[in-house]
Image (cartoon, rainbow, N blue to C red):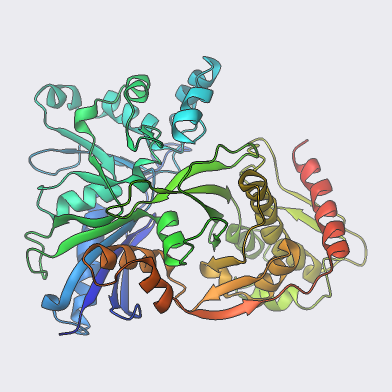
Length: 496
């Protein structure tokens, strides 16, 4: 009998459900979007019910392709938008308020208040994270203080809280399991990343009762079974789960210290495997849990950094400046010139992320002369996308104390061959692009398959992981140093 894994990739704007076969090949996928809710400037919400319906629709759509029988599904893997926080009723599963999305900034004042009290160092020491509304803890606190009727339900023991992975397992298992995996728990600011448990001091700090939170489990291993899901047999093991960026790291087979991946999306997300010890960053990046397989005593940790604007810079050229008609057109326009011609673009359109963490920084376009044209601006944009990643990866190398291995890439903009060559040249490392570009789906599938014995472990994943193309370094060290130096001058201007 053929064997397949059903992977649920629950993202910020929609849900993708994919079918992966025993050889790790993507057989089918379907995506359904759901509404984004903006109650006030800087606030972002999702209706959990909309998320769940998008999952059910995508499952039905994949099964309608009739590429496998439902009885041939041996495991379900979940990967999800991280940090988004939800509350729901213990008995009915109904949401008690819209979920607060990771992008939401409504708890900024509360987080700044904790910083003023000098509590950031304690939070960072325990969690590896900075004090920021990005993470789940302050969102849970806001929901507990503001969702209608929650105080009464809390007294009756009828409130559950969790990130989206927890909510999906609860729904898939008909309310039988309330769990989260260690990678998602590490993004809440409530878990001690060394003990792998909810931390009493952090729970008190953010006023979150321990009994409403899910049980923390490994990222791979049976954590529940399906029940009462239309189109699916009861009893399919839910056996893999990780936050989207950690799933991508696993899906890229980045299994050794120094292995790193970069996801080129609206922003860029970079994770570097640091082995079985959490490294405290001195260079402005975050420490996080990457994953933990069942039976492992210690999780695998990672350093994480992100640039807020990556592919979004190309969208701005298209929509704001109208320099291009479509996003893919930037490759040909940038290739029409030999280099950036002295033009620099720092895409700090929403501030600067790691390693600068400067929310006040603003975008800069400089170095313009009479000889500058649209092609130079396009080339400077691709350079900037790559140079932001160079800054992050060099910071990670300092923390790790060793030279990183070739960088593995994924995400929509990874299809841009010119950008990948620029990244190789400016980083001074080989760039590897996999055949299966949907690496979050791959990671969720691999974790789930390992969890039920479909694959024996990471060595089996390495056997089915395939390279599509490699990009070798073509720039000299001297030229690289000069180009990075010019970029840093422009970054300084953006931060003034």
